[in-house]
Image (cartoon, rainbow, N blue to C red):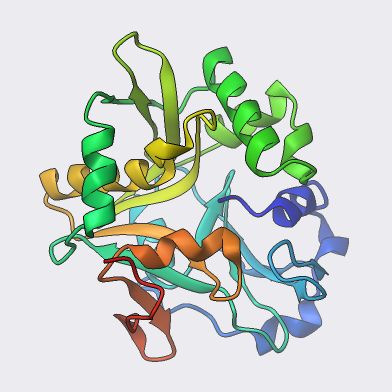
Length: 271
């Protein structure tokens, strides 16, 4: 999911938005080739943990360089518009990059029921282009799930920028019913080792379908069909209810100081 505070900060990307004095304190990713300049944004309130502040390490992405962004994703970066970013928060490491190793993934009983419930939906891959049907569903989702958040006031131009302002191989993955109505969608960046789910939204009027879970199950299926190893889910925060769904996909790998390692099973894991 895009970071709302980060997207707001993008409008302030000038020399005054960065703090060069702190750049040496932030660990750099290990890349095969040098990256564009990395900058640190000012602190802003954390959208996930009340009372905390976040700081972002940011790099502008060169057009069409999938290899670089793949390496950045392996180093814990995410994308928003033309920028790659990762947390660089003072005294906090709550945001943990996670990905699903699809070769070992086995759906839980609950996930199997969800897949069966949504067997009537067809998947369609489209270029990353915005349209009115998507925007209406996007607004319905935000009003039902994230009412009062900064994104709930996004105009169509803002939504279009979120979808189309990309320099990568991005797609919209759509789920449609038998009447060709859009029920769910996910903006995806295709990397060299799998998809990175940028943002997903779905019809909130049928909660029993669990369409958020179904989108990820379809991404896992397509990743397997392409013979790629992983689905990148972005950041998981143990104490954030908004992130709880990610831990239900097992096995799940998390990026830590020693690299990507399997996230330990927890008592909250579905059967």
